[in-house]
Each structure stands twice: as C-alpha cells, then as structure tokens.
Amino acid sequence: MNYRTLILVTVFMSAAVGVSAGSPFFPSSPDSWFAMLNSDLDEATAAIGGAWEEIPPGEYSSRADRIVFYPEGLTLWAIGGKIIQLRIDSIWAGEIGGIRAGETEEVLRKVMGVPWIEETDSLYYNLPWNEGPVRLRFVFTGNGLHEVYLYKVR
Image (cartoon, rainbow, N blue to C red; front, side, top):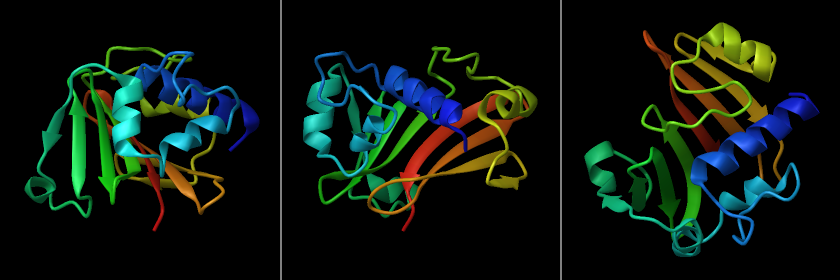
C-alpha cells in the first residue's frame, strides 16, 4: 500500500466516524486513526457522540463482547472494552476521495492500488500497525461497494 492510499484510508475512516477536530480520535497524522483500534469503546462513543444502539454479539456469532451500531452506518466491535473492529456499511452516505457506497471494484482499485488479497466480492489491504497487522476489507455485492471493515488481525 502506498502513502497516498494510507492517507485516503485515514480520511475515509475519520469522515465515516464523524469525529471532530476536538475529538481525541481526530486523525492529525496518517497513522493516528489507528488509535480507534484498541481504544476504549466508552471513550470512543463519547467522542463520536450521537445516538447508537447495542447489538447482542451472540446474534452474530461474534467473538466480541460488545457491538455498537450507529444508524448512520458505523459499527464498532469491542472485547474487554477495547475496539477491535470498525465497519462502515451501505447506509453511510458520505463520499471520500471518490469512494462511496455502490462504487465498483475497478474504481476502488484505481483509488486504493493493488490489494493484498483478492477474493470473490472482497478486496483486502494489509496495513502496518504498532501492535500487529491491521486489515482493511472492502466487500462488494451486485450493487457495488457494500461494506468496509477495519480490524486487528489475531
């Protein structure tokens, strides 16, 4: 992944969570948005603000012990109070760097570069992180880009 792609991902994720410049999670450098991973879920929800609902992890066979869903299309997964995964889904109405819900794989490849792994309906990008690798996964349906996941690799 090139530096331009990392900056785009930074902008994409920060806009998706709707953080403000006063938030402790505001990305002031290309690597600072990684702070959302392994950060305190309660602090993150307070910083993000807005209404959210708790989803029982058992309903999704998740290893997380808490799942928080924002109706604007953001979901946070946590274990032991620490965020392990973020998800933006097709509900999210934003556009960052020419990427939005419904975008084609071809357009995403032009913006993001060559993926680390390609699977049917998914492109994966391996990102550096100080506590182990992080993955960025783009999921496609017949209607184009449907979901974006950012998560710690275990």
